[in-house]
Amino acid sequence: MSLSTAFFAVIRRDLILAFRRRAEIANPVFFFILVVTLFPLGVGANPKLLQAIAPGIIWVSALLAVMLSLDSLFRSDFDDGSLEQMLLSSHPLTVLVFAKIVAHWLVTGLPLLVVAPLLAIFLGLPEQAWGTLMLTLVLATPVLSLIGSIGVSLTIGLRRGGMILSLLVLPLYVPVLIFASNAVDMASNGLAVDPQINILIAVFFMSVVLAPLPAAAAIKMSIT
Amino acid sequence: MSIVPAPLLRFYHRMASPPHFYSFTDKLLPWFVVIFVLLVVAGLYGGLYLAPTDYQQGDSYRIIYIHVPAAWMSLFIYVVMAISGAIGLIWRMKIADVVAISSAPIGASFTLIALVTGSLWGKPMWGTWWVWDARLTSELILLFLYLGVISLYGAIEDKRTASRAVSILALVGVVNIPIIHYSVEWWNTLHQGPTVAKMGKPSMHIDMLIPLLLMATAFKFYYAIAMMLAAKVELLSREQNSQWVKKIVEEKS
Image (cartoon, rainbow over all chains, first blue to last red):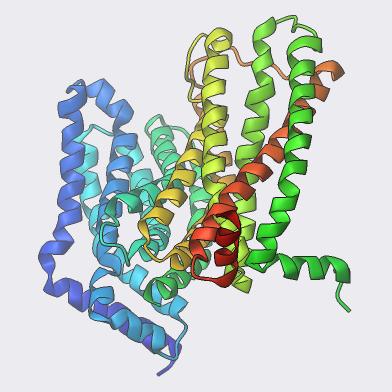
């Protein structure tokens, strides 16, 4: 089997598995909507205030939603030994791990994109910022999955990895949060956002290249 | 031909052996303590007594002699941790693993000291305990990175696996620290922030600078002492079934 066949086979398999457990796909989306809904209740329904903090709210909620969904990235494969088989296969684990991350993003990151406009309406984000919001989500949610994969693979062998996972992953999410929410913020004020978008693109490509390496190394460590 | 001189290489390989490391640090420690005490006394005397009073900040600037060296150490130790973690990952050197994990709590303490002293300094100077200034924020995130390392190490039962996990995390962190630092800096300058009067960068008077450098060196030695003490304990507990530990215990009792 060639490497690319293996790559797409892993993606296909993970998508089929996810499709058979549809309820799990919906969970991060509901969580995303719910957290965003909590903010107006918490800080008050003043439209001006909400509009001002909308980029931050949407981005922090997206970040938390992705983080909570990370556990499903390797959990079942670790439990039933499929991950071990991937480790033993003749293909480099890094590529297979990358395939799993891609599948994970398609299942958890993409639905966030679909509901994001709805949340933008909820919070009264100006229409001119919608495009930027979608663009930052397209660029940065894969980064969240990629960086998160390192954290999950380090904690996969632990029984109560959840709290530690957040401690490991959230500090690493800081640059993404800063640039993404800043871009949306600027766009809603009608300013140019090219620098932020360019940096997000750079961060995206850097994490595509670099993140699977430590993730694969950590999986090897967790399994042996 | 190797570029590294042979005696240095021999020293490096001998340090990889736990009993040798143990006895070597035993010999080294008293010297380091003496140097540390001398440096710290000289630095504090110079800083708190000899250095002139600042024309803008009065005497309160003197906290710089703790604050700045601690902040330097917080970054330095993270880099040391990542490098020794990489050595541990690549050459499977036990000592490097031990050095990496023994450094983490010390680095976290220095980071905390830098944050607390910075906050104490900020109150009279900026009029507030905390500002979301770029440096403060990235120092805070550095503290979280340290805490992540410590809690990950604590959570994994098998200490050899834990060491490798910590090394991977430290390496990922070291790649990220510059990105985090610059993103935070940019974020702050973009936001403009509350216009707290930021200190200009006065070129430092030489009488103020010398004690600062003395203190920075003293802190390096303090780190070496604390790290070696922690590493020795860690080594003893990891190697508790080996012959050389048994010998040490028998000698002591």
